Length: 469
Image 1 (cartoon, rainbow, N blue to C red):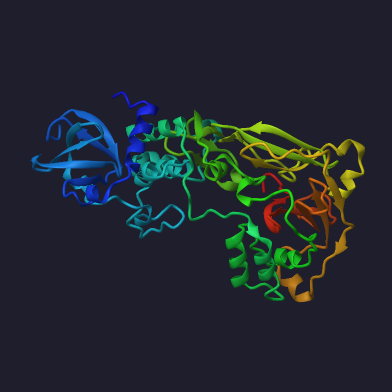
Image 2: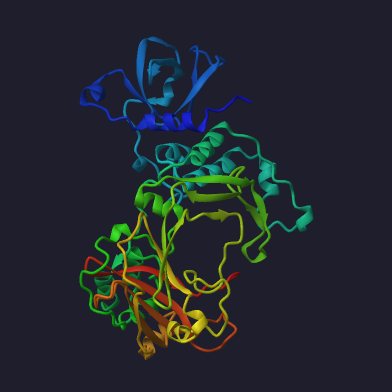
């Protein structure tokens, strides 16, 4: 098997596709761009000639028409490197991501789905996964596909072997991700939504329609239930004014993963492969193979740590370094609220006010957030104030037409610098969760707001999760 370029060389090769071009260079009739995803560059204009290297999509090259022969074009690139490439894999302009459909919008009729190309154009973990799945679609034999079909009924110890073979391009993709990349911008990015915009939608209709919930979920993925909007419009947030946080983009959400903070702070993140594809044993989800070609288990982490700030029930504030590492292919489910510092959360679930009354619980983390560097110094513990719960109103029509409706809510305000202006607010809402053992209304939904430059934003949403559902 041929030796692949080192991660360093792959990074240099990828960087070459982002050279800035002068108008004169763009007007040069010999200027071309590679249009294949991972193209062989050969020593001679022959199909069986030695492969010198590979060039990825959008690598700029110069065409030497006089030296070209038949189906092979003579090219030069980089620092005087030369070779021959199939002419049909060259174009007279660089490709754009907009020229291709992504996996979210792909349909059975899509003819412009080429995840390997889009990976090299803007590398990311999600595009690596898309490419791996595409290789499974196009390169596995029909027999192996049939053996790995979902809902396999064979016993666990008799399930068919998962067979893969090395694909040089996928190996190069993994090497680039192991070397580290910065997550590219995405049309699906959703920064924290301005509270005024959400509140306007929540108050637009007595019973929020599908049009309203689609608009609210466009601002925040979690706001797709009419009952949640009915709850939100009854909240009473503290008055906002400029205080501790001056800029929203400086703040990383509690639910952030390495990819999000890589994009936000322009910090590289990387992967560490740990194992290949494997059989999923969770029968309700359907027995099937989990993985992306020959990749199944891996760690994902930032290459440069950020600051993780945790706020305790007592108001104490702690900071530590974090690379946000998480693992794919392992059970990462956390039962209960995700952002709190407890590994085990017992039922019935206690509210923030109830937990603050328990001396041993006062040093539990309520939630955390991230910054790229140190925060301005604080003078002692934050001022934490919890409002008494108040009843929420749902009319008969709303109760019968909403999936989630809540019985009561409470607001906790957090003043970090004790200037009389809340910097965070947590709205806690009660409802009866069918998945809980306790058949009573209890805290199940927390909306975390942040005051940035004097305006409230929905920073994150923490729901009481039940593993296995």
